[in-house]
Length: 81
Image 1 (spheres, rainbow, N blue to C red):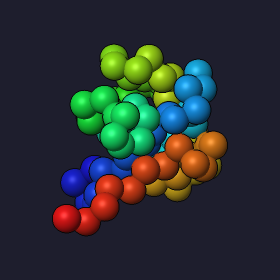
Image 2 (image 1 turned 45 degrees about the horizontal axis):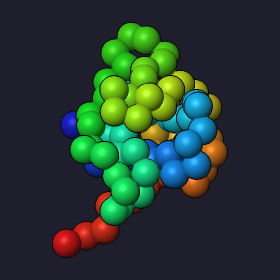
Image 3 (image 1 turned 60 degrees about the vertical axis):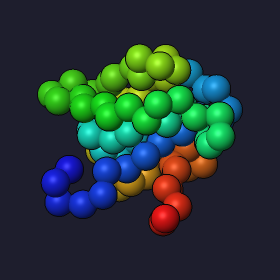
Image 4 (image 1 turned 135 degrees about the vertical axis):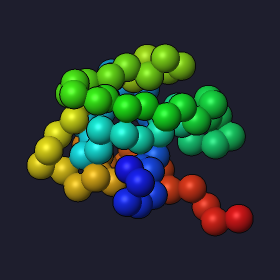
């Protein structure tokens, strides 16, 4: 994602699968302060990937914008310093 900011996704609700519109992104687990290390995930040619920290399954959905997720509240935006 060299052309923009890498999307971040979180899973406060502990759901099994989140659809995302990006194949390269960061999983933060739950929202801070309960987050896990922010891990960069890259699906490559695949359409699914599992976070090694929280075991959330992320599934690529090409109908979503790159920074979007379904459910929508799983998108996390880091606050500017």
